[in-house]
Image 1 (cartoon, rainbow over the protein chains, first blue to last red):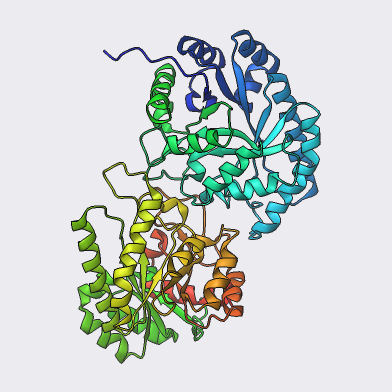
Image 2: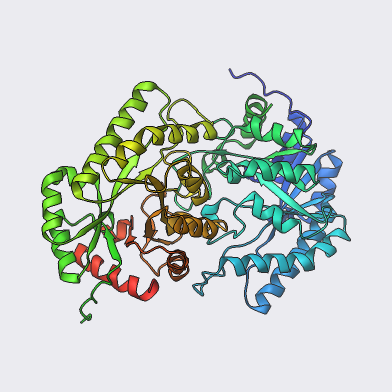
Length: 283
Length: 283
């Protein structure tokens, strides 16, 4: 028989997406059983459960909500689409404030669909424009915006911000307590300039979130659900973690896996295995 | 009925992989019919046909071999694997010289397989070491080495050189007439630093090859065979072409598509359509 899963270290946080097969109450119970003190939540399951009720549930269990995922998708060209995106992001900020998390993760959005738009620089500027409107609104509610670069393979259809350097350059147009970055090893591990950017973000107080996922191949069709369990791939987690911490990062570290295989397993076992892998590969 | 395909412009070159369903003689005939004056060849089909015979065939048809694809795969850690890679690359240089092309395209190779190697910087240095041995051998035979960065989604299993800036930094350790870069829009289109690198490569005589392919989504399983026909995706070909030419690039421009859909069609029709798309989207 397998040994009981170890207790989670204090800085470990589980992103809800990793074990999305668990209901919110199941997740809270599983975290309590394993000593997990932090959770990264997603808007859709929280809205389903009720934002106020979710806030009460996690607060009652003594859990810290390390991030809310996710806002963003700012690249619409038409005024109506832009207004809808800003309204939705204000709602996301309000939800983050209600949940008591200080960090809303933003994914910029890809190239505007349907119009054969090939203009990445302009799409990236639309993201900056949106942040100008959203950052003060979030700051007034005690919420920081964390711009997350996604792997360049998502540049066309999901996120025109493709490197940590780009995300940090964008964030640095705003005060550090308003806009920072979310660094996920899955998206940045390949980038020889990412270590410098991560150090710069941590030393300037702009590393608002640090997430771990491993890189495994072959990539699945659509490349969305192949994020590897820690230790199954090519990412050196100790390297990235020690780099951030030696630059002054003291925040929680989220494990966020999008993985069809893990979603098909028992969620409580996946959480226990994720804690074990974290201790083995990131500590 | 569809109009007859237009004649290919003088700088157009078809990479053999785009129409790999055509035999070498069929490709040569199709090029003659469409006025295509350049072909990028691949080692495997050329070896199958016979290198000398292939050289005679293309020379007899007045075709220019714009590149030979491909050498590289320099990241083995064991001395035996490294020796095998160097020997194979010397053979590739000899084949390029026999075919009368001045450019051998190199793909660096991914992380060494099977040993859970997570050390990208060391793997990248192995590429530089190999170039130190290979560049003079190639130069003595009139062959330039073109280091091709592949999209970061291939960093683990195929190519640890992930950006044009990285490839150019690597090339600049060697004389410009010995080592340069191959820029393929499919791999670099997302990169906000690639325009600067492309200009730097062209102005310094290190842009040894320029290839076009479009970026389309969703990506297929394994992400190898989804390179889009020109105009089907998000790449602005006129931007990249004019950038290179305004920086002094005067070489041929290859269209290299890995696309299961196109491979299932009649190769001659694909070649005609590729010329049409080139005129429509890159001229």
